[in-house]
Image (cartoon, rainbow, N blue to C red; front, side, top):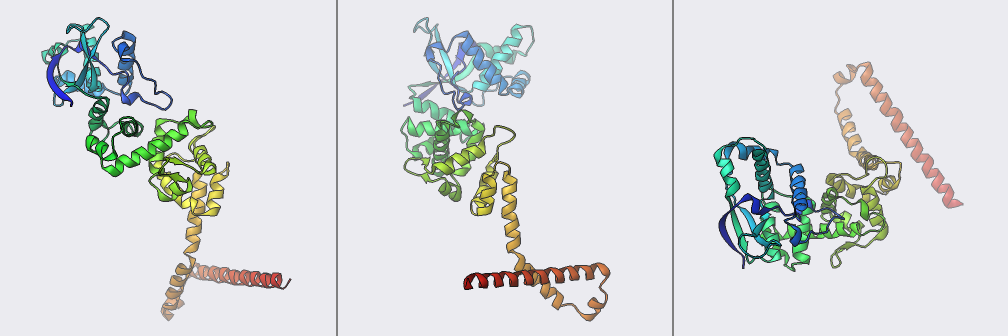
Length: 366
């Protein structure tokens, strides 16, 4: 069982985690061996990646207010190549890589001549941490997930779903156990597991796998949550994959683009996709390379608008029937022009209907 030991550790003995989940992307799942964590190049690369993720405000806050350990950095001990003695012992950060990065950047600036208050510089020699002892791999993942999956500092959807997926698939935890550890509902754990499974299917697709990006995850999260879309793609609950190959390949093609923007770019469009799937003409439009998602959706909306003609006409007829003689006598030229246009359009529709009926009768006689 994991236990936590409060400790003060010199900043130089804290190693950033080069396998941090915030770095995970499709096609870049290779992990750096723990024996290499302390290498300067590995640590420099991790520092730069976290810096680019944005720590400016955090660094400024520490510089102005000191390091306030409201939530201690959580670490685990690792042994360097120098040996197992306490002098060589270092700690890899499990939770708090952004705060550790901010401290390391401030320490670099201080070494370069920048002055900081004593409350800041004293922290460089004594960083308050919690050392996680006897933590299993799934314990470590859960520690990260508590804050970054269901907590206030969430990772992107892809990284959060990857953690859920690994806890279920690799750590063999039940959805209820994952939910308890990460502060999620069981339904949300199941949905993220399904969505990442569906995204993983695209990752290994021969034609589209190398075009998957983390930004696509919300689209799959929404797709597995929409019954109509899920059914159209042939979702298999047992295999956790889309089984209708033709529709699946179409779906993938709408998410990528050789030129310009993909046809489907947001989870809101996934929600609207169900409207298109229910309309044959709209679906034909979406399959057309020269027509956009907006064009296909316009077909749906036009059909919906046309379907409301009868209630609208009945309402207009009721209004006409309620007109008194004073109102009729006061009609201006514009109002009369509208009534005349209605008369002509109604006459044309009646005539077109009659011709269509005559044609059907002739076809039946033939």
